[in-house]
Image 1 (cartoon, helix red, strand yellow):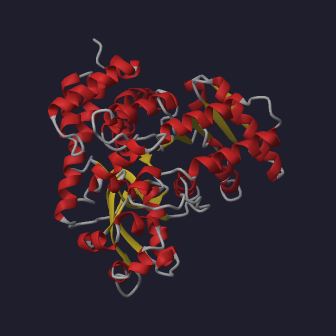
Image 2 (cartoon, one colour; image 1 turned 180 degrees about the horizontal axis):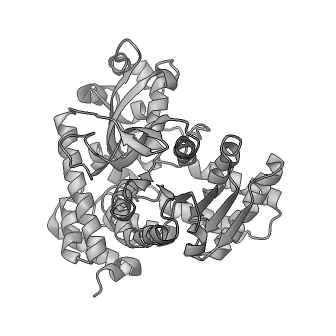
Length: 447
């Protein structure tokens, strides 16, 4: 079996390769191909993979290429995590809205819309290349904004395009630990869109355990979402939101915290990764150690602006059981290895959330097996959550249409209808600023 990694020069590719090494003990993987438009970054990452292979006493053969058709041809699975515009683009995604008093974050708010506008056309090229050269392959997408990008991909690949994110699984795991239970013993009733979801129950064979957790401030204080949102607000919701909903519920607090921060996360990552990729002549074992130290510094700053706004002084810890690489391997193993699993994924709604149409991509528990991901029925959800999901689905679809048709007016509409953007005037100003500073965005609207 051939596995292709698009975005093969990305910083987190060693995590994916390490996960593939572990999966290869259970599922036969013959070769791995890395693809990237930046060959120098791939060469740097390849040295880290060589270090991992040596450490493991042998690895999976891998090659690198800048030819996309060659990379995907004959692949059984294509794993994709790309960043159009690189981290320099992310810095602009974050800073443009913030200059106008609006949240600056890479996937939530205007930053996510801008990211999608320049990313969707590139991802559609990948989908079309796969349709021609690897029509039976599955595309496992981690490219952000993952739900919006996956919905665009499904126009070409149908349900063979599956979006993954580690946030829901991480929330469910932390809730289980707080309850003193094994996550495998519980059913987690999670629903929503990518980076916009809620956990509304955690059931064992007898009952829903979530009310007990919500009533216990001491237990809520033991995990990140409990600290972020606070017991009073969680009890008002009667649910536990995905951590990204902090930006909706506490928008002004987060904007203020980001403005007071000496450095945004995007700026930190840009500085950090420039140093890592510039150190290109290290031996594999030294490259691996350098990568691990850089990764540690990277992970501890995750969601730093939300934690700061919430008054949480501790750093984000690295959970060795989390990560999108683990989610990707679980999907791959369920499909290729026939090991059925229940995973929270982004895929077509079918009838999971009855207030959305069947083709809307949602993020819900899915039964995954050789035929792909089948979403389970969620049914009735809280009215405020439904309203926000419906609004954000309209924003997502308007953004997709803007990216595919080059309609500037639709981009303004997507920005203006986003709950975190205060006015149409501000939406127009933000889009003008993005087009001025990001050629990839300006290009979308050129005839």
